[in-house]
Image (cartoon, rainbow, N blue to C red; front, side, top):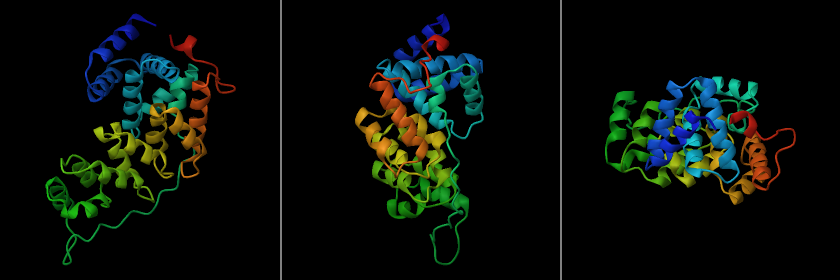
Length: 253
């Protein structure tokens, strides 16, 4: 590993929370060259998939998921493909693009008129839970973003949002940028929702247990790309590299 990579691991291990480690990696990605970052992330993904540093892997997976709508992922994917960085490339796969459902209608908050976005965002900030069910079904991501910051929101609420079908893609992209993705139930719910964006869900597979990967690899509720990557990660954990995909340890060190 390069000196730069060694320093990055040292800093990551010194940070006390996943949120701080993700923030640090986000800043690192902005400062480093894309190729350098791709190699570093590939090393973390490679080692983590084979029993290495799980905290660093956790941070990288959450970062990649949070960047699902960011063009930086396309550039990282290009470097992964050119450099044969298989472990990073695996978590950046998108698979087939799912057809998008028609936009949902704004829930009826009042009988006399439709509330403006500003009014709905203001409502989402309030501690009053009476309108939470309607707010969770709101089609505007700005409303969802505000609601996900509400301290009265519970994990059960967020799981219902992650499970909605047809999947509210914009809402799930917002969800991926929040600390709620650190919750195991939220991640598994997204992984079992076939309409969830693969750019959000596929990186999360790196954080699954062996039992969870086995379940997802056979679940026809999950998207095809989720099942495929789950099978590959299972093979790696069982000591068998996926056929045609050699270890990337030599190319990312």
